[in-house]
Length: 168
Image 1 (cartoon, rainbow, N blue to C red):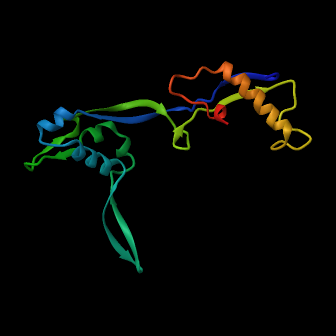
Image 2 (cartoon, rainbow, N blue to C red):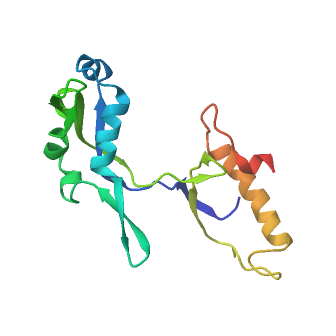
Image 3 (cartoon, rainbow, N blue to C red):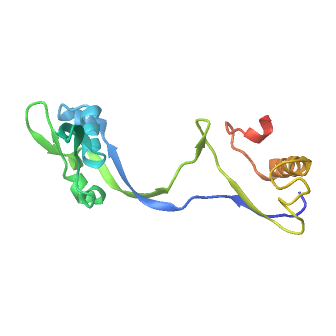
């Protein structure tokens, strides 16, 4: 399409994220299930409502959760204790790999599917300003068709990826 420059995928920023990979065989040696480990991790990081109390005719949930600073500390998370069926306790680090890694800040979804956005600049033509206005009319439909045609040749989709614009 004449005027489209700097065509690229919009990529979200990477941020550090806590990653916990529980070793199923290791927790099984302690008589624990994956659910047992997940419940402990969920309570520590997201919180679990343990009870509620009434304040002025309204129930207020009481959530058990690690302090904010502790939720991002790998050593604290590694030291979480898992209660075994025999009443003993084992540290999470004996049954999981725990660390930080870079991950995307957000995952965009529409209609229950992930999507990636394209970004581009327009040079040498008026884009978005037409006689009928920028958001309606034949000028916008013509530009959309031209853009779809241009992008279909410029962007190689992986197998199993669909182009929603091509379905319209």
